[in-house]
Length: 160
Image 1 (cartoon, rainbow, N blue to C red):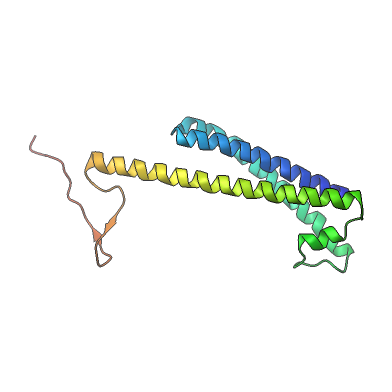
Image 2: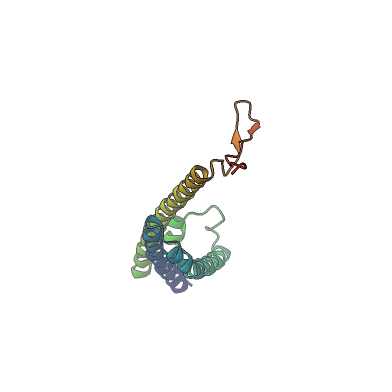
């Protein structure tokens, strides 16, 4: 059971690293406003996230088996509690290293994801600004002081 847990943590770490590499490619494409590359990366991203979800379910099922076999583990148990129950020696050391690596990898993946989300919002705001400038009307509703929707007149010359 402990070996399965270690293998799952290792596989999760590899999957998150693959997601980070893909996220870096996505960031470069977003900076260059290369939407075709972003679209091409989406199926691979979906595949990796599906694999991560599968591995997380596997990890949870292993943890449930451990909790069923140990009185000391429960829903509120922390990873340190679980690691303290691992066989002393090499296995415990390996599990601690894998868990620390996984924590760092997940943190890096979250930071990269937040950065990419910021770039996407900025690109959408820039597109809305240019559409407003070209059309002379707001793409999204604008609100007045009292919260009511303000309508904009159209800047078209029908006499032409």
